[in-house]
Image (cartoon, rainbow, N blue to C red; front, side, top):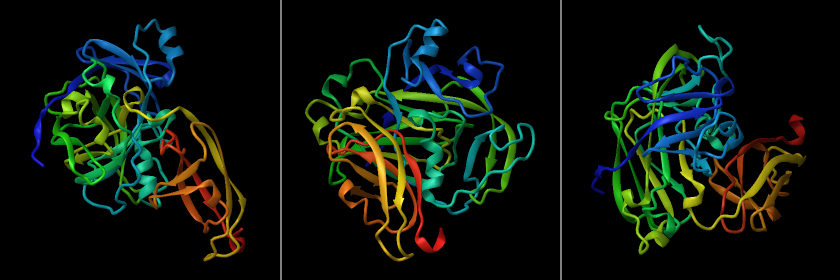
Length: 350
């Protein structure tokens, strides 16, 4: 697929909950550098401030005028776990227990745990973690169909973050169920986008060893509308997937979507998952789990992110032992914005 022109709108200001509340904008970058977990509360693009829905009450208390939103991170199921040059976990410098020197982290055990740095925090919008220089390649994620009324309505539909020095260009497109292009493949260019803030971050290799500590890096973000990607009322119903191409120089904290812009999902709550009965043996699929899910449309299922399978509630009593990272799914294939990790033991290792 040929790459289309860049068609993004730069984010010009950001609001997060670092140290209670933090604001920074292009042209007046805050002297405070976030160095811990913090959630994006809102952002400004095209002259309008949008809330993400994480904590509108905090924006209210700060006197911020905004358009209320419903933003969530796109679920990234997995990323490669191999240790390759310059591929790193980014964490706010205080997260490893040492804000000014070398701390420690637990190395990710598998590809799901690596990807978790792009979906952590409320609504997956943690601005204090990310991945530096994501491995080059195409990554496909399932999405609902775009809402026709959201096309070219002046409200952003997608948001992308860049948490270090910009070098290459990424791209994005929508696909149908047979991986045919829907609309236009469009580039995301970072070098002409102004920074909106700076943060202090540590870099760790995939094996958990320190790579570079207490680095100050710029923060950038851009938004896109459906019309930027060639989505029209005629082809919106064909959308089944979104494809991101990361250039190898991409440093995202998360990729986010406007929940009001995608059809077919009623809000539902995924509160947790628990073990009812361990599997009877290491190779026996008879472990029983339970999940707390409400709202949406029943019956529910659990999407096992690493395996790529969705297991209906009727199958939660026939699972092998293992470590799982799961999201809730309802009968309309709508997926929860949050996820939980579960370790299902077998009786010999209790």
